[in-house]
Image (cartoon, rainbow over all chains, first blue to last red):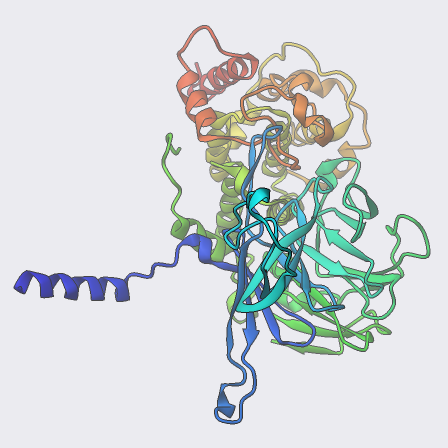
Length: 320
Length: 251
């Protein structure tokens, strides 16, 4: 008896003190959908967990704002590049929701090398009364069928299923750091350290390279692309940020290869705060357009900056 | 160096990385030589130490920029020999398929002991062969050292003019320490031909030295003293190490 209670005590404290979250559970990316109803998280183990906001209810008004698990699925698996003897991590780097057009939800999720389009749909009805097979799925012997019936849709427990609809692979030599869906809802861009590729959502075997900053001699490489995003309204405009703290705005109508930027945003370095680390901490990790498309927000190691698209030489606001 | 199967602790690496990324407190500018030296060591360890393949391209570029900046500081301050040596080391490391861990350690040591470095570079030796017509940074680094060594006091002005001059007879009195490296070793592998590289690990799509596995390092360390079965780079390492030790010991 005493032993049992001891064991229970040990088990309880063990479970409480030891965090059973493994390294694979570390969340690597987070993204709300446009309405805010759904929140998608990607983790290091290649899984995507989608949370849904609780419905508003008069009896418990304070519960609005809580999210419950809606769907969980394994988006990416670890792969091995045999040519280079390198493992391709399954960690989800970015998730982006597509605008909702029907009852199903679509999202793009990417690891270092492959982008996948996932469809998340609900099923709450099940057809029953097939003629040729039983309800458990076994095929009925045709000789035993004496009458025909029309299958009827019966309600069932809500089931949320995720299916991979497209796989966009083999387009990036370096690690994909961001994806961005265009306002035309037909194309999107995927960005790695040196290149930006334009895809059509329907076509998986072809992509167009629209930015390439790889130098002829790799020894001269001093700057990499860290993030890119489409303009929210203009489907021909996108911006990309670099590891040196600059943002370039490009127009795809100018040329097929947008190496030449239209606008270049950079705040000159303050010589009084110059140090060995100033370049590293100025590296921009993310760039986002405002909803009206007139401002840009960037984040580097220490600050968040808001830029006006019309003013290239310094940001409007800096938050530290 | 790490042996087979020894996992690098995440905590240690995190600490070092945090140290590197943490900005100077209160905006104070770090210009002290010891801080710079520490930073240089840390950066070199990250790039060329064990498991550099774990680094992403962005990190490698940032760390390399730090090294380049320190290199420029060296040259500006007139520590031209160290600057050129550092540059030469980086160039040679890039050209090799597998790292010469011994050379790495040795140069590390030398960079921290400038007197020893001066002694080494000033020792006269006859070179086996003059290097062919220069192109690329290897030769310019060679020329820099050429320019700097005959004069007892280093002068940065001469280093800037060296690149425009053609290789002159002073090449003859150069340090065979440098001319032991033939240009064959310093071919910069283009990233697209990485699949044709020899070696167990191949070369990843990176701009830095090819990937090093713990296996390679252990093999390179244990390769000294073994006779047959070594490929060219290991033999070169052994010869170079021997020569350098000779110069240091003065025999």
